[in-house]
Image (cartoon, rainbow, N blue to C red; front, side, top):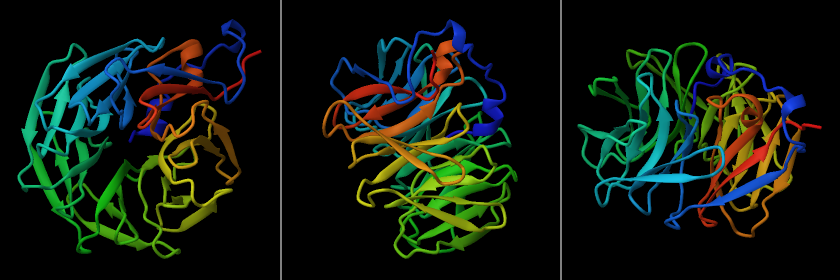
Amino acid sequence: MMVGSALMAQAEPASAGHCPAASVGDIMEYAIPSNASPGAVTFGPDNRVWFTEGSNDKIAAADSSGNVTEYPLAAGSNPLGITLGPDGRLWFTEVGSNRIGAITKSGVVTEYDIPTANSNPFAITLGFDGNLWFTELLANKVGRITPAGVITEFALPTQRSQPRGIAAGIDGKLWVAESFANKIARISASGTVTEYPLPSSASGPNAMTLGPDLNIWFTTATEIAKIDTSGTVTEFALPDPDRAPTSITLGVDGNLWFTEQFGNKIGRITTRGVVTEFDLPIANSRPFGITLFPSLQGCGLLDIWFTERQGRRLGKIRAVTTP
């Protein structure tokens, strides 16, 4: 859930010569003080990684050493998706309260009601138009909210499509994973929708990100896939189709990194489709959200951060070896 290439360009490369020795795949994990089950994760403007705690009705932030600060929301909010907005606030979806929320780095929260009741807002991302775009899983819509809080909703043509992941494309459109319809949708700023069926039946597309090759990469129930701006889909098999790839992000190494909930692994895939997997130290951690951390400079930029829903931890994995 990030505008990948644009943000990568803003990040300064790390100087490996001044970083502690580490190898690709080295993992560190940090306990969450409240023992919450963390969800989606993104980077903030304050050198902290931000994540949702749906089970605790909180938004949380951790510094590069894993020190966590939690910010409470109203009971029953159940926050899920989260992304950095153009105004420096973190924007998130509230499944339970049917709202979009925004939080400052000091913890001040503002919430905005979604016009459609019980829409089940799911994922959220920053568009190249400077607005926030989000999916409405049960309303079969895509929403747009301005930094001032004005919401516009766009219906998807396929009924009960269950839109989940969303990412901004290099073409200026928003790309949406229609999990139940087994399609990828492309929507313009004015709401014009084009849908592309996936080659494999019952793929269940989920999370999405803009890749280093300027294609949209996404997870399915069993694979990693990409779609180009013409709608051509390429699918890449994983070593085990039952590992449940979930979230995906662009890495500083020019590869895509993803979580495997049932495999208890973090995966890496090159743009040519070569997959490498890294085991998590603790069994049954259920890795979920994952993000690059371009706000950090130097050594911190070399890590990919992720959440563990069942392990109730925040983790980071080294993407680049330092001698």
